Image 1: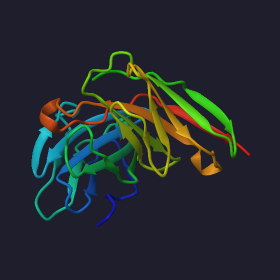
Image 2: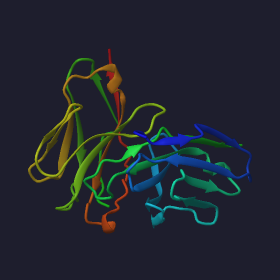
Image 3: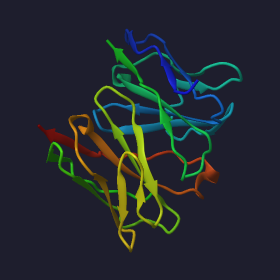
Amino acid sequence: GEEVAQTPKHLVRGEGQKAKLYCAPIKGHSYVFWYQQVLKNEFKFLISFQNENVFDETGMPKERFSAKCLPNSPCSLEIQATKLEDSAVYFCASSQRGEGDTEAFFGQGTRLTVV
Amino acid sequence: DAKTTQPNSMESNEEEPVHLPCNHSTISGTDYIHWYLQLPSQGPEYVIHGLTSNVNNRMASLAIAEDRKSSTLILHRATLRDAAVYYCILRDPWSNFGNEKLTFGTGTRLTIIP
């Protein structure tokens, strides 16, 4: 497709429950990035992929967060045992190349609310 | 990543030009300057990027200082739809083996006054 598609748009989970978010990158884009926006303006990088390979996972809280990008499937971000502090908007972005002069295209985000 | 500094907020009248400043005094020689905007309840959207020369596209212009320590995003004629948070971001194409994440600052919230 011509846009990054994220599902669901909203997700509500009780504390301790699992949450799974999906992202379909733009067709032909090899690079996928996940970001977490907690406060209105503050973004935190979580993880990036080059095709199905994890490239940079320095932002991931590894004990509860995991992510995959498998061939012919949407990418996914999974949070086991959600905590209140995981409440945020999660954005996925894709780009054709990974270099610094490349434009990144963002999805509309998934708003996760942990209650 | 080199850091950028932007004013927290700015206001502008509708139909007037808007100049959004960004300071990046620690910019390296290979860093590209990128601008993204975020409308309420939406994902960030690419606006423009440049390296050394000023750049124009259908959305905006980017003026880069000669020493590259600062830049200005110019919206030539503000409309109400331009009300958004604007982020100035540096990206080094040669770092991280060519897979460079965007490092967002806190951005400038632009309010357009009708």
